[in-house]
Image 1: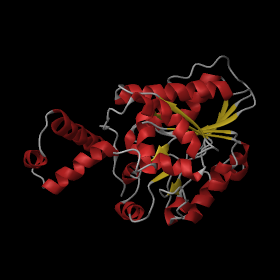
Image 2: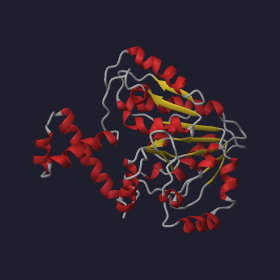
Image 3: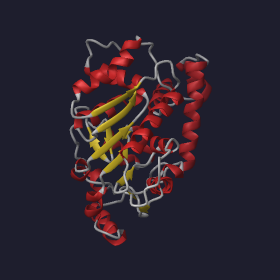
Length: 323
């Protein structure tokens, strides 16, 4: 079974304690293992998870020009994607996150119109971006649509259904939601649920969207939504991240896995048919996932912080950027 909310909260609290002990108090792995009565291997695993969760990010004091040049370099590598790199040198994790979300919110305000059909993904990135939305006016003709099921997040306000409703309130427009799970047992059940619940054909609904705001996901969050077997199967693939439920390898190629057909998410071909596909991310731990998104072409516009941008360039220019 997937990890329940209580377990998730306890695990996050443990990782926060580990982060303080290892990075602030300078405790060794052996000391942490002894303190918690676990093996050194388990202590090492927990320390690694601290970064994967974005609780701690490693900031190397790169020269200023590395931060300012990162956007130009990434745009050169990915000319078909508009990459916005927010210079976050000397900023904390929280400050960097807010700066990226604020820039993305300003961008959304600039491209929205009274005829827009918007879909916004779940998660803390989108939730935070909403707090920076200050529209110039209301758009009663606009529509916000939910395209993915509910993940039963540990924080309910991260769910797509809730975010869709909040965006509609902000812009003074209509919205369309459905109460379905994100993951079901079989592809047949997925299709039956969509047919039974949706007011209109799901494919037609997806085809009407012209703005998609989302983020990328690393593999780590999936352990809280999948049972152990499904999660282990995912780890045994070449997948490094996902975008709107589309699984990608480090080269940006779509990895077809059985789990994909059990997700209530928009299909890849419909995602690519959306005119404006915006991906927002912050934190160096997402470097592989964002590189995969950039290489895939699934996003037309990307907002990231400069620390993350440099780490992506580290993966591309291994001879020039030393990690």
